Length: 157
Image (cartoon, rainbow, N blue to C red; front, side, top):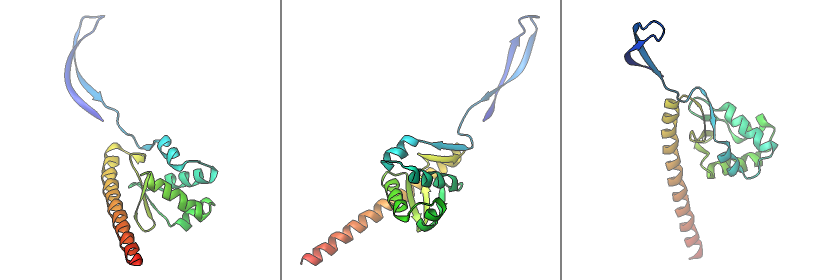
C-alpha cells in the first residue's frame, strides 16, 4: 500500500537549491501468495510420507479464494492416488490439530492462520469464518459426546 505522507523541502547538496517534493510511504503487507506454517502442519500429521504429502499439496493447490476445498474423500483419493483410509486418517489428524475444518459434508476449509493464498484483508475475512466454523465443530462434538453418554447410561440401566 502506498500512502501520500505530504510534502518536504529538500536541499540539493551540490547546488544548494531548495526543492519541494511529495513524500510517499510504501508499506508491505500480505501479497497474493501462499503463506504456509509448514512446521505446524508437519507436527499434526506425525509422519509425513509421500502419500500424505501428495494429499497436502493437492489440498493446497485446490483451495479456492475462501480457503475451501470442495471434494469428497473418494474424489481426493482418486485425484492423489492415495487410499481412502489414508485420506480419512490424514483429514482427521488435520482437523484435530485445527488445520482444517469440515464446513459441511465434503467442503473443507484450511485454517488461514496456517495456510492461505491471497491478501492480508481477505485472509482476515476468511479467518473470521474459520473461527466461527471451528466453534460450531466444538458444539457439535460436545453434543455428540452428551448423546453417547446418554446412550451408554440407557444401555447400562
